[in-house]
Image (cartoon, rainbow, N blue to C red; front, top):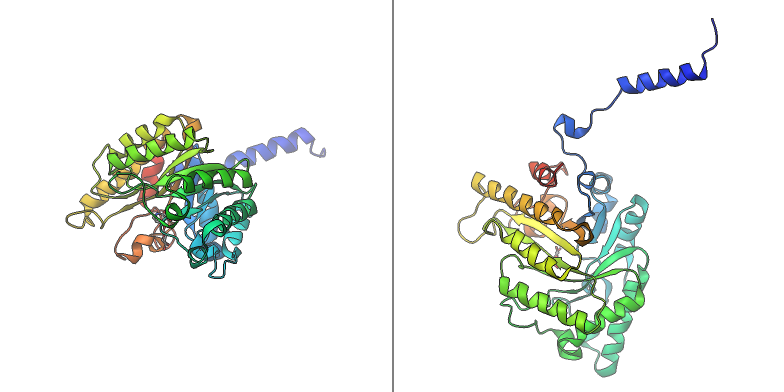
Length: 348
Ligand code: XIL
């Protein structure tokens, strides 16, 4: 018997491979990993402890391509009462992203909700120096690893009548605290995409108008604004078409857009709780509309689509009402039918 030829071995290997062809999940009616279905980065809000769990970390790494620290990169975690800066958790999240090839998105540098004691105790030039040191230290620490930052979060008044008052506006000036934050972030990282982020931009056209005017003012002032984030925290009472209208108007400046914190509550709707089939149908429709509105943007304007948590039990909304089911994965970290809804809307 003649020894096998190289050509024969190759042919046999190919034949075996053909027999063992693994049907793609989609052909089996299962959702493919979300990051395989989306031609743009898909993100998830996480906490360091979740990533340390092998099951949850595995699902995050397999399904998503971007990480947003849910709260551990905010001042409330980083800025200690004595002014020292703490990075244990955000470093762990950044390291997980580096290890698994996931982008890191920094949330958030300056927010009206965060007014740490260490800053309140500063006055005059020390306040401005502390502000510059904080932004420079945080953005500089993740230079080359954070793809972008929510530099200023939720600056616009809910009724759209101007901007929120906060510690930062009182101490540094209503517009200057925002302009300066972008300038300082750019100085610390020449490459990161620097975004302005807000919520209810689907529900409140007047707020959206003021948000866009603020973005234009920042650009006119020379601020390195590189993108707009629309949080997209929704409830099933949102009118069909509102997401599409918001995305289209927000895209009118030509900047990249980030659906930055999406969830769709079944119970926060005004009026009767919509936990039944009616509510779930509306929830599916809203997720589908958001995915479709986003994928129809020009590719250069599709920064990322981020979901505000992995499992329903991880949602910040769970603390308001544990019956709520706003996210794409169930409490066992298995994909819910909503994941297939999003993938279908993406054309997968
Ligand atoms: C929320 C987190 O999900 C909670 O864990 C935390 O206790 C409070 O902040 N808009 C934002 C997010 O920009 O930072 C908020 O995240 C939700 C609303």
